[in-house]
Image (cartoon, rainbow, N blue to C red; front, top):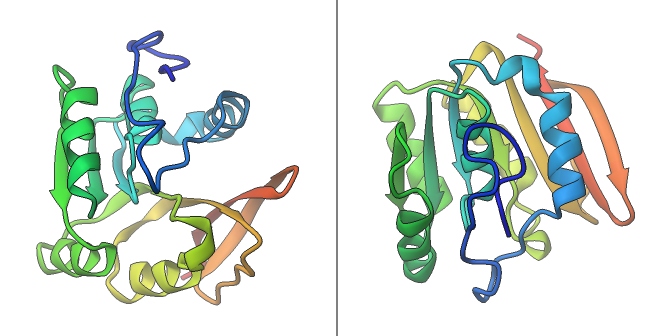
Length: 178
């Protein structure tokens, strides 16, 4: 697994074999980042359910200013630290997603881009979207990128601006409605 574009292009990433992680395939990642490239320069990113950190690192590689990586698996945190070594703008949080979102809200942090790629079988996207809205974590012109498989995803707070299917996987990009 490697960073596919930007200033860290070709950088090797660990973590594709950790139990519970499921790296985004390169062709999906390439298509995803091509579709959000205009949002990346100087953006503040949240990579929730970070796993190896591949999505957040890709964002940093393509011009994002900083990225908060959140995961609750101690083995993943060790890999994240190695994968982000010598990359500026990295903040790693070892926490449950719900607690992390609340802590970020309590610190009045807002993001330009939020990357949601939770374990597929847990159906967490809708809960995350609700918390992101209720905690006011997305900036007015910000976007949320959701990757999922088989989950019914809906939101009253965010407008779908892009939806792309890759076999059984789906990526939806949302922006704020209000």
